[in-house]
Length: 91
Image (cartoon, rainbow, N blue to C red; front, side, top):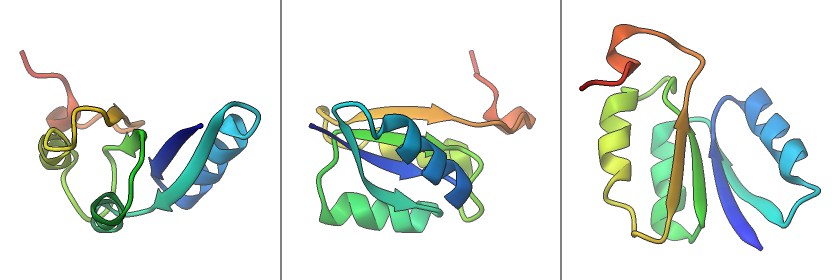
């Protein structure tokens, strides 16, 4: 079973859980802030992190840099519905 941490607004966490409930994937933890998510990551093990860049407590780009320090076997999927310039891809 794939263990997922969903880091998003509560309503979107619920939607993610509902979407994945019929697969071999289990949303094992949910967090609405970056601080809560990093606490979960420090105290547990997940296989995949689904992360919204638009969290209220930390800049999404800074969070992405912190996510790069996760163990190599942890997959990270980062997405957002926001479109401010600081979230756009830099080349």
